[in-house]
Image (cartoon, rainbow, N blue to C red; front, side, top):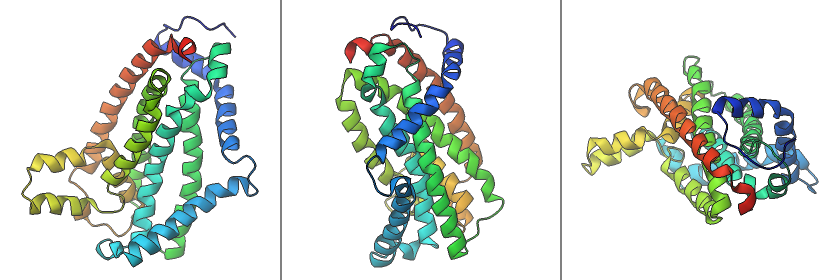
Length: 286
């Protein structure tokens, strides 16, 4: 390993370096997951228990007691599928924001591609997403709410779209948090607001109805709809939720998702450039 030092290399070289450190990336991902459940009697079983309790809580309290289920068919599957894809984003960005600060000892002592740390956070979030998918698929089987086979084509694009923006924000926030530690706390607030701004506990059609009722300009609905988080949640609903009709989705959903993914890749490139510019002083700032 090289000493801490220069970091101005081409993106291609950086990707090669990350690939060379893939074993370390896997180790860091495993370590982050082990730390999360260290000392727990049930250990990794919590990765199944937590989403199961979340599913039951939202279904019973929000859906049945508060009546939210009346406007959304198959409410349990609807809300949990939205939460599952959103938690992939939330867990990725939330953990990535503090990843470099939390690994300050490693960053100061040895040279590593700094991208390894936010990437390990995203890797941990993907593992947790897999656990939530097990619960989600189990609930689909139990409730006999089989998804539309054509709609399943939206599954992978929705996940990829969410990962692109998770990685973009994760890279940027992990470096910014070294210079300004408030970033981690601002990120937590932002993630809460973004969850309620996404069509998870309400439907996209409800938003369209509200905008029409208050005679708000049409572009307001377009801005809301073309938010990449909204598109990823809608795409995931399209894949998993069997209670939807064409009116529950905006027109040209697939095309919108494709454009959002392409824009996201450009933003990911910019985020990586900014990350490279900031990472030269990370060790000194920690």
